[in-house]
Image (tube, rainbow, N blue to C red; front, side, top):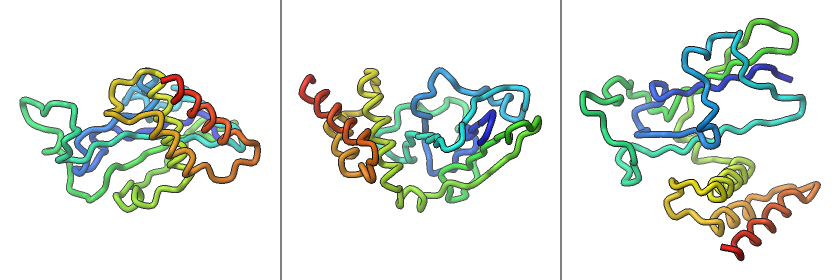
Length: 177
């Protein structure tokens, strides 16, 4: 079990292969950059046996899908080091009852993206479905049908039937749309 989980991967930590990114679902709950190393700032708890997934939408450099204009007086790219990495992830957590946090760091490489598990793809389908229901204007033509197909293909083990129920709800939403 962990307490006070903080996830950090700001733009300056993204490699030169990424033009832009956004953390899906946390648009209104971003941790201030200066608070990442501050153990007094509470960022959230994860109970025993629970899992948290952070999903970033990334746009590679050179993609026609880039939505943010280049900076007028220089670019973020000039400050980036050519590491061949997509990002550098930093995660801080506290063990129960401890006052100081622990730091885990790891690079995220293009190879990691190539082998996404069915679990990660199912999570992406759920996140995409949620974005569509919220009326997210950045879905670029991705539909409920796309989300349902991705969820169905990556449903995996479904001991309690919740994943199948979600696919059924997606079908229902398709029929209403």
